[in-house]
Length: 69
Image 1 (cartoon, rainbow, N blue to C red):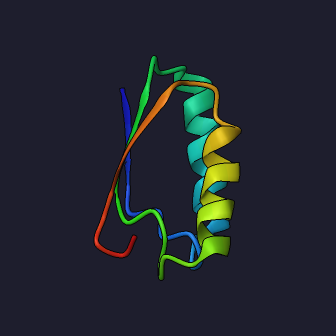
Image 2: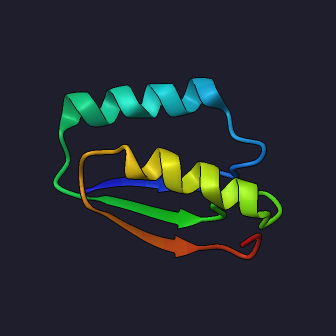
């Protein structure tokens, strides 16, 4: 399982996301767990960006959102 936390889409770090994508591609985890704040301010565009990024990842994903969402 590969764990990510507090992605904060809306103020995301694209360099860090690219690095994570590389790690996931190399390590080939069976699943991803994403916890904490998915968005910065719970704006629709932030959720759309998060869903697009997460949807492009290969492994199955579970999400537990945070207080920003």
